[in-house]
Length: 106
Image (cartoon, rainbow, N blue to C red):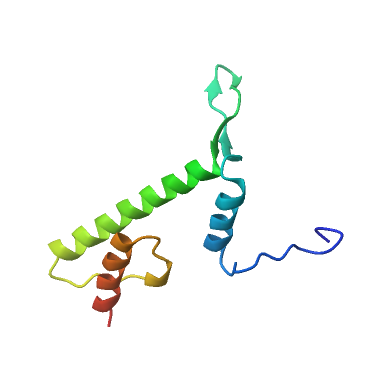
């Protein structure tokens, strides 16, 4: 049992991505992802990215991934084959690139 009253319900959340977006809205300035760097024979203090910072980096990574896929499509005579879901694209640039990939699949 995770909690006395069961696992909390999040309205409108059906995927892990939607859960993370909900967390960004609710806890944007709170610590989300932490790490410690090696210092001598031990480790230094924790450094943290907030939920908002992690979200921004994920969007940048997704945008870079979409750009690479778009370049691969435009530079190749062979159709790109892969597993994609255009519904999950977080912004129009990614959506159009993923739709092009999706359209090329048999």
